[in-house]
Amino acid sequence: MAEQIQIWENDPASSGLISAAKPNIKRLPFRYTFPPPALAPDPDTTTPNFRYWNAAEALRRGADFWGPAVPDQQWFGGPDLEVRLNVGIRWNANYDRRALNFYRGQLGPGSFVYAAGSADMLCHELGHAILDAVQPQLWNSGNAEAVAFHESFGDVSAILCALQIETMRNFILTSTNGNIYCNSRLSRIAEQFGTALHAIFPDDADQDCLRNAWNPFCYAPPASLPPMGPSSILTARSHSFSRVFTGAVFEALAGMLAVHPPATPDRLRDVTFEMRDIMIEAVRSALVVPQYYASVAAKMMLAAAARNEAYRAVFRDAFVGRLILSLEVAANILSSPTADEDTGVAGEVARHTDRPTFGVLPSSHYGLDQPLHIELPADPVGTAARSATRDGKSIAPLNVEEAAMTFVDRLFMRGRVDYGEFGGKDHKGDKASKNPSRGDSTHRLELVDDQLCLRRIRICCGQCTALRGS
Ligand SMILES: [Zn+2]
Image (cartoon, rainbow, N blue to C red; front, side):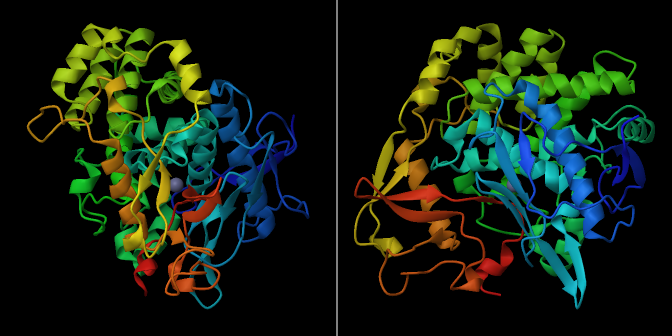
C-alpha cells in the first residue's frame, strides 16, 4: 500500500481529515515544482508541513483529473509549473503563467488564513492554469466575458476536483438526497478563506464562502452592470460575473446526474468526467468573441447533446434559464449544429496558430502620450451564439473595438494597470511594489515592436476592495 498522508477532505472550514496516498511530487505530465526545502508529512494541520502535503495532494488530484483532456499534455509554459504556497500577507492567490502563487490573509496579530490551506483555492488556481493550456487566447483578450469565464472555470475546477474524493461524493449524495444542485459544502467555494475575507471586506466574498455555485444570477451584458457592489448583487467584476456561468454549469451537472437514476457515487464520478470533456471540447472550439459566455455555452450544449441525447435539454435549460443563450439561438443551434459555423477541426487549429488581431485605442485619458494596442476579441460574425435580454430575445453582437475599450477603461478605472516606465509623472512607475494601495496589478504596459501594448501579467483571485484606497 502506498504511503498515506492526512489531508482535509475539502475545505478546512467544513471538512474532517481523511487519509490519502502520498503523491509523487515529481511526476509528469503536469509536473509541479515546489521551492525547497521538501518537507516531511505532518498530521498537525497548523504546520507548514501539513499545508505542503495537503496542497501537493489536491494539486496532483486536480491535474490527474483535468490532464487526460488537455491536448498538449503540458502547462502553457512547458512541463513544469511552480507552486508557491506562502508568498506573503495578502488576501489573494494568483496564476501568472509561471507559477501558482498563494498568500495568507491576516485576521489579527499572529492570526492568519492561508489561501493554500483550502483545496478549493488550490484547484481554482489550477483551473486557471489548465484553461490557459487549453485556450491561451483568453489570456490577453480585451474581453470581459473571457476573464469572467476564466474565474468560472476555476470554480468549476474546485467542484469537480472535490468530487474526485469518494467520501466527498458519498457525503454530498447523502446530504442532498441525490439532488446536488443545492446549497452545500460542495457549492460553497473556499468557505474558510471566503468567510474570513467577508469579515474584513464584505463586498469581496459571501458570508460563508468566497462564492457559491448555487445562486440565482442571470446573464446581463457586463457593460450594463455596476462596476462594484456587495456580493449579494451581480456586478461587472470578473469574480462576481463568473457566478452566472458557474451556476449554469452546476445546474447542468446536477441535471446530468438526474437523467440516469439512481444517483450513485460512481455515477457522480462519471458525470464529472463527462463535464470535464464537454467543457474542454467547448473551450477549444468556441470563438473568443465579446459574448464569450454564449459562444462557450453553445459549444457545450452541442458537445453534451452529441454525447448523450438526454443531456440536450439539461444544458439548454441551464443556459437558457440564465439568459446565457437566447431561446431562439438555442433552438436553432440544436436543430442545425452547422449553423454555428466554426465547428470544424481545421478552423480550430487555424485559430490557435493565428496571430491575434490588435486594436488601437486612444489613450490620453489613461495619461499616455501614444496609442495603446490591445488584443481584440474575435469577430462575432463567426458564431450564431447570442445571449438573451431579460425577455429572452437575442442580444445583438457587440462591436469588438467597443468591447475592448470598455474592458480597458474598467482596468484603468480600478487601478489594475502597472504603468512601468510609461505615462506622465502622475503614473510613471505606478505599480504594486512602489504603491501598495494599488494591490495586485493584472496588466502592464509594454513596448512590443515599438508599439505600446497592454498585456496581462497575472489573473488574481482574491480581495479587491483595498484597491479603492483603503
Ligand atoms: Zn481566479
